[in-house]
Length: 245
Image (cartoon, rainbow, N blue to C red; front, top):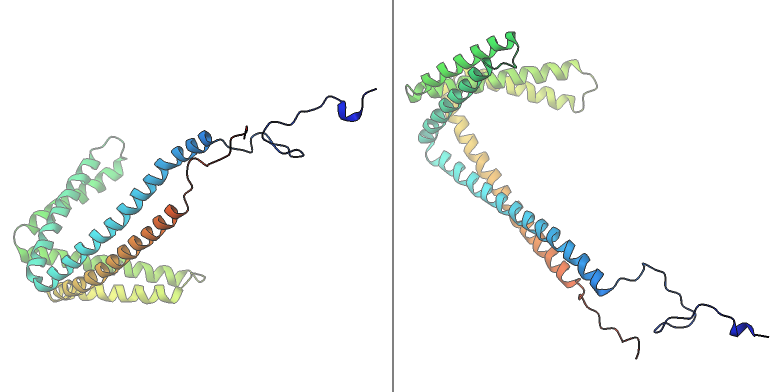
């Protein structure tokens, strides 16, 4: 007779303790860990490059905004002349695209007429802007004034008609203020646009400083995350005793 201890069964593998059982797939070899880390390395490098690019873009935009605000405050007359020229270029480019859209085959007939009228008017106003700085500034002031008036009237009407609109009072207040600012801009275009230049200069400086602070804070946070990640890294190869020892 054979004793129970002599019955054939699973022989424990060399290097494992008796009474323990290894589950297939639960232990990773050094080669598998190295392959996983190799696959994660490009993703981590891409995220780091994207984060560095983000704070650099914020810093560049902040410095450019501060420079633009300083120029607007120091040389308001030159700033207005440049703004008038840029506005004329904008009108010309917009008019060309509107005329091109008017002759498109995919545009319905009634929209072709609208595109053609809008494009012709934009090109005409753009050419008027290049006649002199006064004409360009007058058109720019009227453009801004009518835009504010239309937006303020629309926002006020929408807030008054919708009873359950969130922050309804604020929408009504901003709509009324925008409409009044548009009326003032239309009535006194030159004085209003000169004041607007100073306001835009101050706002550009404030926004630029905000962007610079955000860029610096983002850079510090990225450095802290990189330091924490480097301290938590594990070596690729672990010193393990040989199974025969």
